[in-house]
Length: 218
Image (cartoon, rainbow, N blue to C red; front, side, top):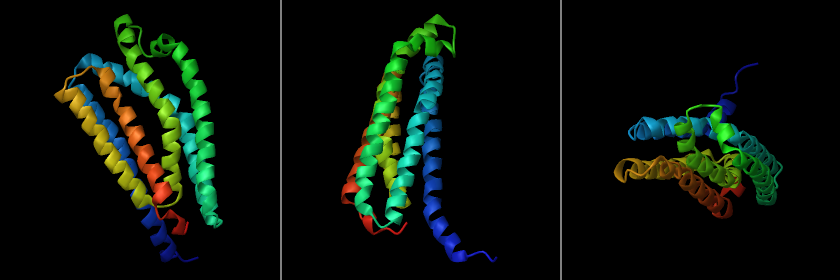
């Protein structure tokens, strides 16, 4: 078999923007922690613990995001764009209920969860407020990430890259403003997660309602 250059070209035209998007997404974490590092040793220690817990608790949401993206692509591939929004809403509801149960359980034992990473009582107590901040952010993540995954499922990867770039700019702008300019404590810095998910949810919902994705061939 000879390589089909037309298929390779179509695949790259879709995937290259996803690659750039993930570079920006993970790169923003690096910049975020560079900003936090300027706040001092204690905020950085708190943030490292919070990051580990946060990523662990996000795993079910990421899995459901992949489900939403796959189902949306399948519906468009079948020529049934009217099924897209019902699919996204259904998965979003399931994601919210699933992560809400995790958040409620996790909120009962904050010190036990943090104690996995440190036995320093002062650091443990300093981490608790930020821990509750990320639990609230998880509730937003459970819904907003599904809508964003739905946009990705339409194969309009240029749009997802644009949404991600604009949202990350606001996210890092808020982080710098609060941490460096206003010199607030680390709890305020982690509120950046609310900025990120609210904006990405609004942009994704607007695009799904008003965008031209129905004409996209997946």
